[in-house]
Amino acid sequence: MPFEYHKNLNNKFWKDFILNESVAGKLVDIALDFYRNLKTNAPLEDIELTGSLTNYTYTNKSDLDVHLRIDFNKVKAKPELAKQLFEAEKYKWNLNHDIVIKGHPVEIYVEDTSVKPYSTKPVYSLLKHKWLQKPSYNPPEIDEQNVSKKVQSYREEIDNLQKMLNETDCKIVLRQIHNRANFIRQKLADNRKECMQDKTVVFDFCIENLVFKRLRDMGYLDKLNDIKLESYDKMFTEQTWNSGLQTMFMSDMMGKVKKKKDPRHMKPFIRDPGTRKHVQTIPNMHKNLDKFPEVGMLKKTKGRKIISEPRALQIARFYNINLSEKPSKLGRSPVSIRKQNNIYVLES
Image: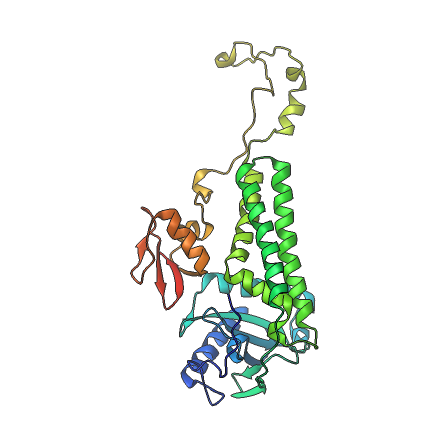
């Protein structure tokens, strides 16, 4: 996928560096509704729009990144706890809402005013109707070979984890897969953050940020998250020994016969842990038995979810359907999938 650097800002949102009035109003309404749900005593100091749609680096997959600026020191909780609470609310909101404006999803964030934004990052204040940091046109030189090499390395490791996951039920191996998937995801995030703080490179085009975005657009971050979830589920739904019963019936394990007083159990029996396993499983009614977690979630709760193009193609191939503007049912379930302005939507 080639990197995109345009000569002008996205004309669906900007004209002469002025944000479309209708879009600005919608984003403010969304942010204020989210802020009310936070139920915090700390005042909202600003609502800012940032990300690639405020720059020359936008693509058809770019999000509208809306940041609520709040002084965490004014929250009735320690700043670190406040950050965790706001992160949880942000995650819940983004999970439950799929708001799209002019073909681009809206993502909500909460930022501490005491943390200064990156100096090279364009920022537009939605409350003050002005640029706080105007974008500068400066096409960068990109080490495409280095980016491609790193992306290919991550892809191969993630594909290998998926293959291992498909071929094992061993609890120890599943734990290793889960831990490695967590490690890779954290490594990607940490490396991206570190390179974006480097003032010697253009914000959007530091190597690790490009690697992160390339993997995201190819669906590999979704795949990594699926590996984490599936390996965790398999660890705790496999057949396991019940250590409590082993202790209680140690004498039985030695081969001794035990009789019970209940007439229904007058026949002697031997508890043999080699043949009698205690199965700890989640009842089927509480399981997500679908290959794709997002499909299972929408079967239980009506709603919509935007997914990446690679993920949409995986789902379409699995259910043997063609993607189109018209919703296509996934098997006999109430869930359907459709393509809308280059955005792929699951809904029920």
